[in-house]
Length: 187
Image (cartoon, rainbow, N blue to C red):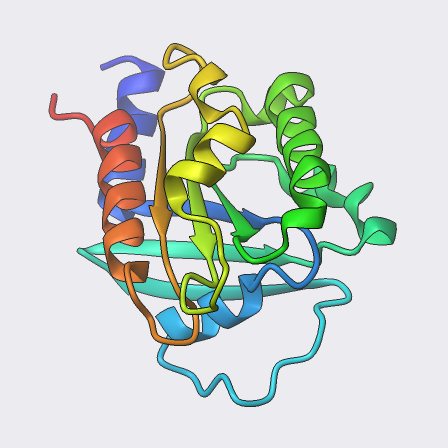
């Protein structure tokens, strides 16, 4: 039995997935994480560093790293890329003025960061509960998500609301299933 087989079997026993949650400030990353974890969302302040939550989902242990999105913190994002299986990119669908900045930051990550190569990408088009928010299809076009090559990243976009919880579970199901199909293959 080779070393890679032993390592794969060891990781299969743990069934652990590391997820990095990023996006611009005020996109709703922490609110999403708290909603998924069943915590109250009535008092949330900006994340000045990071939050880590470990959750059980479909027999997998998810380590979710929620990192602040303020411009002054973004240069530190690279410190969290090591061993990332999936990136959840949260977009404020109601913030039309910063969509170009959102696109620039996302593509800087995907094109320049080797440690994220091959990571599953889930784009959450958050704040769908707000009047005037862009649809997931409009976000898809404005962020030019179709230019992400499938050979580099599996990706999907889901419209959601951190406040109501709409589509958060569907998004988590998709990201876990995609990562599991790549990492925890049957022998």
